Amino acid sequence: PETLRDWFADRGIAMLQCYASADLGLIAYESDAKDGMIVAEDIILEIVRPGTGDPVVEGEVGEVVVTSLNMDYPLIRFATGDLSAIAAGQSRCGRTNDRIKGWMGRADQTTKVKGMFVHPQQIAEIIKRHDAITKARLVVTRESDNDVMTLLCEGADASHIDAIGETLASVCKLRGIVECAATGSLPNDGKVIDDKRAL
Image (cartoon, rainbow, N blue to C red; front, side, top):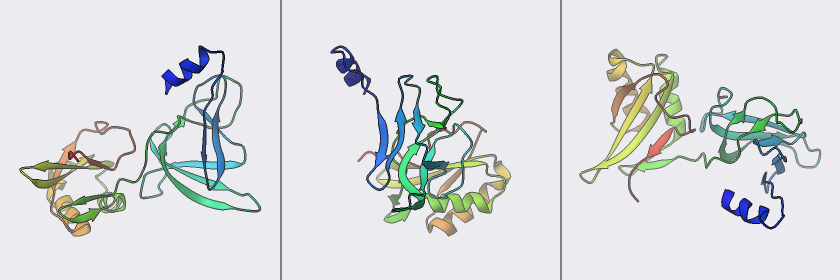
């Protein structure tokens, strides 16, 4: 956190972050410019839609997937389970490799609704079956002690709701509400399933 960074800075200690995993080692690192994390040169990094592996547009939040061609321990398209986004442009420090915005949360959004697991892959399948849907998010709430799931769909209109609802029931084995959402209204935070129930 910035407060910890400031605490060290007040004592004359420069503090920079890195992003690493036990499986891969260093993935990305911060420079003195502190404008995101620069992807290590021996890493191929992709940002994909959680649960699908489909690439997202630059700047959109998604799951970090990494390829390392290390001769001793190669990993091909290793899904880290972490969320991030590609930062636009180059670092002010002069390094030219891609940058990520840093760690932005976890990608695993599997949840349980009415005793049944619902996975991001299922929402991706619904999107694939309906060309009208450009982006979707399943919101899970609790009303009067009952789980309620609502699929918010960008791109779809009222004429698509019944068909999408049938696909939702078929894929997830649960009935839910389908609502149209204005294009660009769903947050760009990498979430496919948003569980809003109080734990």
